[in-house]
Image (cartoon, rainbow, N blue to C red; front, top):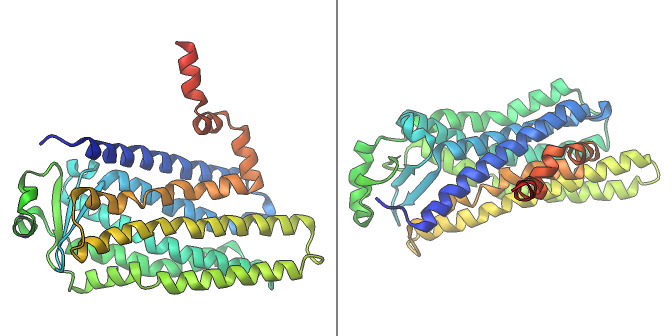
Length: 324
């Protein structure tokens, strides 16, 4: 089956975007472990949590490269895996999908924790790193449960193919260029849990985040004279990072609209099915740069790194051209 040019572009987007996101998050992890000042080591635990989650999301996107086919007004979900997992077997694709899905809610819970911690330290002493790690593990429990229970419900090609041929005979998915799997019905407990955990907490969490941001800003303005110049600068940098991080996931709205369009039968097309998760890739790609560009020690590290500067400013390409 010959791939259309737009399909080639989506594959290239997944490969390049995911690879770049993995590199960016590894760079952030290196910066955190080697360049974090002693007085901010505690908050660095939260940054490490974000970097690991985003790195995992990029790696799993590269691994599965998902096409998500939704049957309008029905409870069947069809997945076509175009990533590296199709060479390692259906079980690895299912596990990769489950890990990929569980990164989204954990990122949202982590954002809430980060804003809550910024508000907390304005009124109390910093907690120990051990306590912060424990809190991260506690908020990770719902996402961990999601990752554990979802992948066994995804069925193999032999079971889902009759559904695919019934709802989408024009796709001829029996000869699809990828590994076919799916969910015959989303009425089982695991699917309901995943859908609720992905969609349910987002609105109340975002409302809480922006309330906390308002309170932090208000407290910073009130305590301007009490805080040292360095403390004010540090709080301001962290708050700016968190605000941008809270805005970036709103890109996911494009994916949600695409999903609803297909589920409600408004519009179904292969481009839409590939776009649902292709649209989410900028989130873990660009999230690490909120820290690398706005936290001064990390920004200084990046500015002194010839490799990073080369990659970000395309100097590598220019040097190759000049050499030729």
